Length: 498
Image (cartoon, one colour):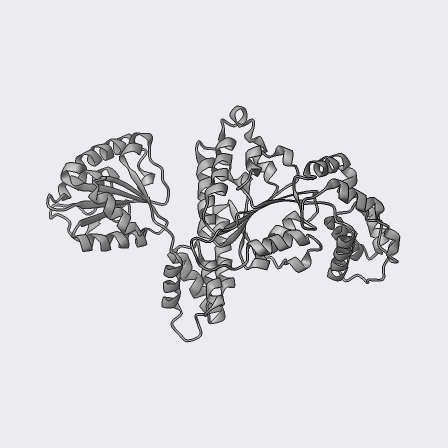
């Protein structure tokens, strides 16, 4: 429903205090002006710079009125008993904490039911003092949808060949989702200047700058793909199937996401980053720590705002790395931070369970015991995968991958990688290239995490056994089977091994 339609309903219902949250004040004011013209209502607006404005100001109206209190008082003199009069106060959250302003708003909103006058606060934030909470209804000015973005693109790309068609146009619209009208116009114009046509890469570049300003989300635009990840075949197949293209049908069941549990260095974060590239979706990284604020209510507000941004940028991949570190304090939140962590967790859990946007969530964790039980229950995620230490076949693929990446010859003998992860194999290849030494020599500088944290790794593998899906092969992960295969495995069959 459009902002003008919701506003019209509330005016007819005689809600005389209306708070509109919008990041595009001019667009919102234009919508209200069209509504008032259609309905023959009076519309006035006020801001600190230009004072009181309107096409039908009373003759004795003072248009300067830099004082916000005087602007509220002026509404009574501008009232028309035959039709509603709307006074739009732009960015009024900057003045609303004053006791005089609160009292004036209270009186004017109560008088408005008889005088048919309406106070409309237009602000990018919803900051309503406690005294006024019951007097205001809140409306949200939505960001442009795909049809509106397409209309903006067509108004800018007026020459033949400037606007792509087919799947490429869909990628442009996907990339522009979540941008304001002003930002979309700028992104499309920049793309025309740079490439003489609208391209999704330029729009994503501007979107990453927009997310950077929020400080809570970042846009990953790396070149990683599944081809650069050895192993994890079952996990790759599951996500490919879950994120396969579907008809544009509201009744289609949307995928929720996966929770990846595993030993550090087994490729959890690398997989999440490669998934976006593989499926053609932007990968948004959420920093849970950045959601925490020092002021009362700030953490909850930041969490809601971050999730709203994520919803607006669908279709997307939402990546939350090492989620247990951000949520581990929720159990003792009542004693340590007045319940802030618990409320943040509750907001996140509700969104994971109820969101209808086309956002696929990938959470990674190294220690499942630090996560609250409700986080891993059914319907939060589509599946829980365990990423174990790679087997012999997976290690061979990883060695080949990183030898090629770092320009190493394939005839070198490989070190004993019995307890190595993919990250440690990469580290060995990188050190061999950096120090210009054979792999056997470079391996002397690598101490695997399965050795330095053997107890933690063993405990994690025991917990995952029969509880998680295996990332390597279809079915449930079994610690007994992997242990048996490793004990039976003979490394001597590889002539390049030491």
